[in-house]
Image 1 (cartoon, rainbow, N blue to C red):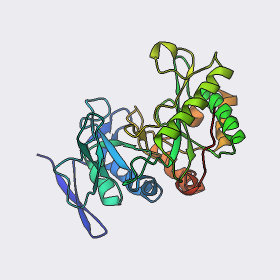
Image 2 (image 1 turned 120 degrees about the vertical axis):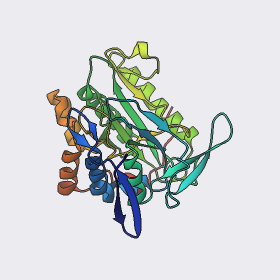
Image 3 (image 1 turned 180 degrees about the vertical axis):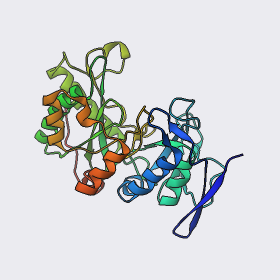
Image 4 (image 1 turned 180 degrees about the horizontal axis):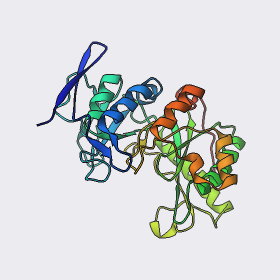
Length: 302
């Protein structure tokens, strides 16, 4: 029988259960600690979640056990958990959860929704992405420092297009680079732009970069995944935990940190646990804040 406790968040009572359950066995990190992390990181996380449909990625048995994605917001959700509808590619609609407040975030964490995977648009403008996302994924035996080398090349190309970009770790093995738009755009435009940039990187660095999706081509190369720029795809949200041995999180970093990691070849420089993330926020605030408001327009890229 699950032991149910209640947390008062503002005027909302949130039921939580099994807080001592270990979700990260190697780190002895419990569900209660997961919820505590999301409560502490919420002031910087919630603005990035606001109005974004979210796919839950739940690990009821912990990171070493069974997990599943949940697009349809559960029917047993409390009335105060908001949803937004989006069309399915195969027809019909999905009512996605929206994590617009701390109570909803804690409710999701209590379901062992360790990872927060959001769309690149905000509801109700489901065809208007607010960013362009590049997901740099290292093929074996490469690691995140190899992604840093490619990210610096990507930054240079974007700067030539007069575009500012902001890096973050994936919280797993790769690096992601976001180009904020916050202006009228479309997935058709952003996807074509990202694809063109990825192909340019592959042309200039064919021995280290691949832009094609086939797994057989990724050995010893960094995949510049441009395909995330699509209305039906989600990307792990900044500050989201990841289901790894340790409770690592997708963490915004500076370009100087990217350059340092690239030079050192030390992947540990870009691995951040939940504790590390909170310390970084206390010191530097939200390094990803410009992604929320910086307005930029994509040039044509051929």
